[in-house]
Image (cartoon, rainbow, N blue to C red; front, side, top):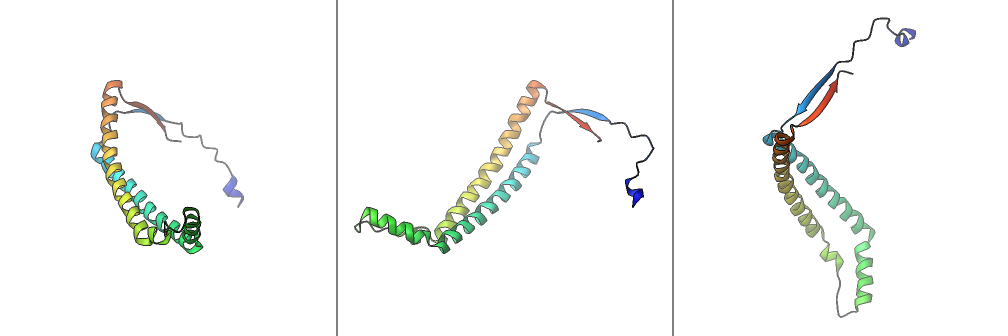
Length: 133
């Protein structure tokens, strides 16, 4: 056990620093990464919408808020939040937003990579320093 905490008397390796410049981003790589990030966000959106709907539906929020709105607006304006926020409506909206998010995020990843490439040509890129530490 004591041997685990003993320090070596050997000299430490010198820290090597490498300076590189990030000059351009491959647009196809940016599109791939953007697609997979947006796919993960789409799955999170759908699962989150399902969980929020399940909690609100099981707690009776839709019925109580619908009753409150009916009492405020009067009986001439029927309010039925349970049918308006049914599982089909909520999941349809979540899937539509998730698909829209996938398309827009993937397209924006390509646009931002192209913009970075133009700016990189103008200013010479971004200087980065890496070490082996």
